[in-house]
Image (cartoon, rainbow, N blue to C red):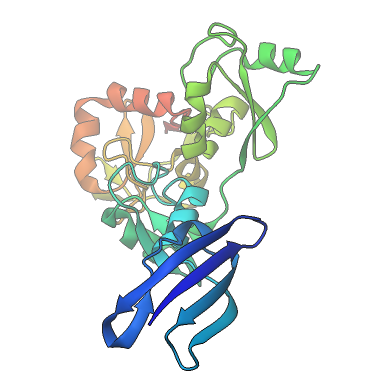
Length: 288
């Protein structure tokens, strides 16, 4: 026996014809890649010759279900960045899926899995939405007030017309299109830099119990500064990723670290790590 299959896709007037060929188990088949029409309604007309009766025709309507890999690809494109590190998904190899509180989330690498599972509430909070929008008449004053691009630290207008974003509903201006991805990966950081929501240097953090020489436990008074800093400047990891945060004295300023092992590097080059924080829009508080 032999046959022909006709396939039409909902919303598309074109009809596709495929010859059916004998296969294992006395079946007829046509090898067709339908991955592009997953989720769309298909109408399939089949005509068989040599069957009993001699000619058999029938029609079926179906919808192809996407595979898990296809669903993941869409979710990764929508999520864009790792919920733990803020790095673009795919920048450190294939993203890793983690089931948390009924959600399927993605992290950039296996190293972020434990941090997400240990503190899911922290990392499942929604990031500020980043949108590219058009200028309005009132933007000239806002550009003058902001003055520089928070990504490149260049004067706005120095590389052509500034780019306007809405980050969590707040206007933020960039020097060029190339800076958009940086803000998309770490929106809270650049929002804090422009709107000065990082902890002010004039607020003083207090000393607390030492866990080893030069390394202090944190207290409730440190929480605002921990929230503002977010990451260890030595390891570039979340402050609670390795049992922290802890606090060290860097030339009279408090720097928060993920583990006591990072203290030696800060003690050796305190100004280096204060500069790292400064570049991230964080003003380290003074220790009294």
